[in-house]
Each structure stands twice: as C-alpha cells, then as structure tokens.
Amino acid sequence: MKKDKLTSKGSSLFIFILVLLLFLFCTFWGFKGFEILGYKFKNFNDSILKGLDLQGGVSVLQEIVDENVTKETLQNTRELLSLRVNKFGLSEPVVTIEGSNRIRIDLAGEFDSNDIVKTLTSTGQLNFKDEEGNVLLTGSDVKNATAVLTQDGKAIIQLKFTDEGTKKFAEATGKNINKIIEISMDDQILTKPVVNTQITDGEAVIEGSMSFEEANKIASIIQSGALPVTLNTISVNKVGPTLGAESLPNTIKAGLIGFVFILIIMFIRYRFPGIISVFSLAIYMILFLFVFAIIGAVLTLPGIAGILLTLGMAIDSNILIFERIREELTKGKSVKVSIKIGFDKAMNSILDSNITTIIAGLVLYFIGTGSVKGFATTLLIGIVLSMFSSIVITRFLIKLFYNMGLRSKRSYGFDENEHKKSKGVIIDEHNEKI
Image 1 (cartoon, rainbow, N blue to C red):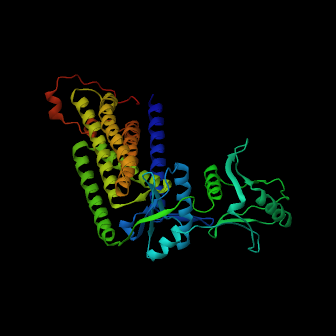
Image 2 (image 1 turned 180 degrees about the vertical axis):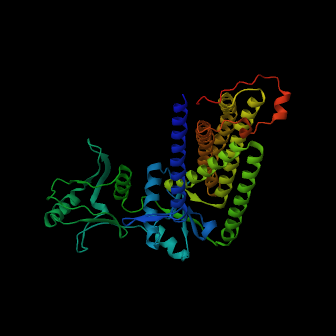
Image 3 (image 1 turned 60 degrees about the vertical axis):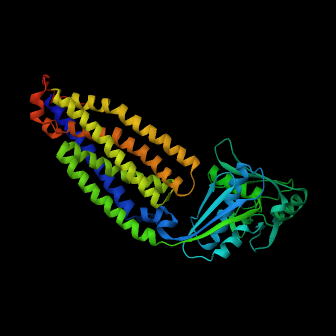
C-alpha cells in the first residue's frame, strides 16, 4: 500500500515536471522565438497581426457596384485584392469582407493612398509565361479552373481551356516539355508547374505539395482572371500609431499589475488552489496567444479589451470552483470529496455564464464590422479557452497536487472557525487517490 502511494506520488510529480517544462518552453517560444535548421519559430510579436490602431497605416473600404453579388464572387474578389496589395511589400495584408458587398483593406505602414486605390481598382491581368518571361496565354484563354481531391487525398487543380486557348496551350506545352510554365496574376506568381508532356485536348492538371485550401484559392484566381466586379472606393483613411503606441504599454502594465494583485488575493483567500489558479491562468494566456497567431486573427485595442474581459471570466470561474470546494470542506467532508463535489456544483454556473456570453459574441461577430468584429473574435476565442482553463486545466492541476500529497484541508483555504460552526461529520480520506 505504501509502495503504491509512493508510486502515485512519484508519477504525479513526474507529470507536473513535464507540464512545467512544456509551459516554460512554450513561453520562451512565444516571447523570444528561436531558429532550428534554418526554420524560424516566430515569437508572438512577429506572428500576431496587429490592427492599424496599434501600428498605423492606411485603411481602404471598397464597395462592389454590381448587383446580386454571390458569396463566391465576393471571396474571389477578396483573394485578388490580397494579391494586389502584396505589391506594396506586405506578406500579410489584412483584407476582410464586410457585409454583403464591401471589402476592407488594411495596410500597416507608410503608403501613398492614391497608389493603393489605383492598384486595387485596376482590371488586372492573368498570364501564363515561359522561363524567358514570354506570355503564352492569358486569362481569357481559360474556360474553367477547379480544385479537386484525388482518391489518395492529394489536392490538384484541373484546367479547361477555350478553343483558342487549347491551340495556344498545345503549342506552349510542346515547346516547353520538362520546363516551367509560370502562372501569375498581376506579376504575382500563383504556381510554377513543370510540363511533363504536350497537352492537346485542352485539359490540364496541376499537381504539387499543396493543401486543398491553397489549390482552391489558386483555382479561384485563375477562374476569375481579372477582377470579376467593378469596385467603388467608399473611404480612404490614414491612421497614425500614436494611440496604440501610448495605450498598448499602459494596457500591458495595468494587466501585469492586476495579475499580481490577483495572485496575492487568490493565495490569501484560497491558499494553494489560488496559486494553482494563477498557473492555470498563465497557461490560458499562452494558449490564447498561440491560437491567435495560428488562426491569423488581427489584434486591436478593442480586441485587447476582449482579452482582459475573458481573463476576468476565467478568474471568476476559478473563484466559483474554489468557493464550492470551501463550502464542502466546512460541511465536514474530506478534501477528495470536496474537490469532486465542488467542481460538479460549479459546472452549471460556469457553463451558463459562458454560453450566454458566447451567444452574445456570435451576434457581435456576424452583425458587427471592424473593431466590433475584432472584439467579438477575441471574446469568442477567450471564452472557449477560459472554459478549458477552469474546467480542464485547473481540475487537472488540483488532482495532480492532491495525488502528490497536498491533502491538508488548511492548504485548500479551510477555516477552522467556520468548521466549528458547521454540523457535518469529518471523513478522513487522506490516503485515497482521486
């Protein structure tokens, strides 16, 4: 029995050390970044897109003049505009759809707004070129382009040419066997397939190591060719970074100060679970920043407000859990039983409050635009992760430390004076594992 206890304690300690090392590694990665074998793992500052209110730039709102615009046409137009703004040297411009017929383009940095508008509203040109740069075909020669998945799960692009395009493509492929034919839009390279054989039937397949999403994007641009719609410039705004430069450091400083106060208050009130909750919240913040970087969401000042709001909700969830645990302890129940009942009782309250907030966030996301949508994005991501933090991570850490031997009721904020007022019977189950 004693050996089993030691084994359980040792394995729990080992798991905690692994969790701690993983957390420290992710923290180092997020705030410092590193490079391995030529591949750079970017830090949060480099990988998270920032809104114009944080770094300044130009914001252009374009409206599609044509009537009855489909979602597919709107998406294709967005992709084409993304290619065009890459001319300004930006690897990740922020191009978003607003409503049913508007597209907003945000470019961080100093640019001539007239050049931007001219580039965005120009017709554009799709070209097929040989290795010498000679134009072999244009967008008008393409009849259809679609992305499909093969039976073995590989993404390919199927091309069909017009009658005139079939003749041109047969001649082009005949002269460029084992050579590259470059397909570009406004001099932005889409793909560079190698010709394996002469193609005379007007149908071609482009293969490569690309995902279906990438293949579909390229196919959509080839299919659209020039801009499929007429654009009208609604507004062009230059935004200075002054607001963000002043507000962001103050916001971070206020957040750190608040975090320290939370640590102190949680420890005084709940003892060791308070420390666990702070560790859980730190994991939550790291997870949040990683998710934000992975999905390519744009960080804005309203978005930072959303982060702080969800952090507060994560703290609130932990407080609900610990209060329920304390209530069970004052009734005379053991630590093990109190932990189980405490989490079970807090679950409904946590789910109710978070689900209602998720509904509100979804409404803001689908109805709102601009900064409102940015706030909704951070709110939704934060709510989901805060629930994961309190329900999964906090529970996991408390059970882990309980199995490591942290079974004293005083360690869980048990007040002897409150206990003396209760009428419950104390049940000692210190040696049991959760």
